[in-house]
Length: 315
Image (tube, rainbow, N blue to C red; front, side):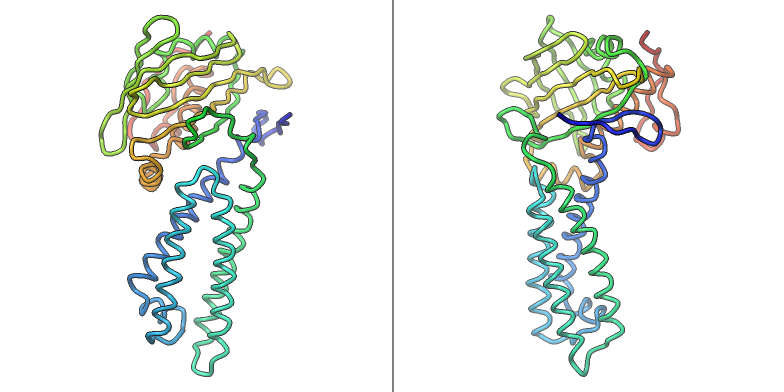
């Protein structure tokens, strides 16, 4: 059984709510690997000068090989569902980098000031890598209870000061979803269990799919999956649980999706700030504001491309 802990604002959230920072850190370190790797491959001479080692053919060859390693590790972190192994790969690479710099410092001609600075920088990144790898390693397969599609998982949670029944009722009317989901353009229901969705995609495009409800517990849970021919295969569920101490409803979204360009497309979307995990987190904050105060306040919405119109709160 998963436990919940109380956040600084008094809300009770599930452990998934506190994993967002770990995922963002992993994505950031993955992009750092890509950037460093490209620099090592494309400009090994300039990098050798920066870290204080000899700019000769041997050093350039070593830096290029390390750059290829960094690029591969970065791609692994950004494209894999569970990147803990790739994060530990970064830790091993850090150890190799520190050992290499230590050997370089022992040479008489070495610029010990620059190499010392480089070692300090690597040690700082190593600490982040170890922390992130440990956090990701604590997640098991049970943290990803998705369908057989085995796509890219997203879990986000928020506490809303409304009853589970009222939050469920608002969400169950799927045509309400574009009111707080910034990536959705429209949803049309087709009977009680089927619906048609159209959403924004990277590059100004739109994607569409048909979905059906596969399981439902009124007032507590809705589970869905996309149907054959969807532009974006996706499945998941949203749960509405009464928060401890009468603090409202804990809403948990568990989503798995396969982007049109696969894992590479997901990586590109993350790099351009269109990660569905970030979108869902923002959307849940917007839902909370709509249901609690009747509108999305400017301080939250203004950092996004478009503002949500004020909407009446569900009773």
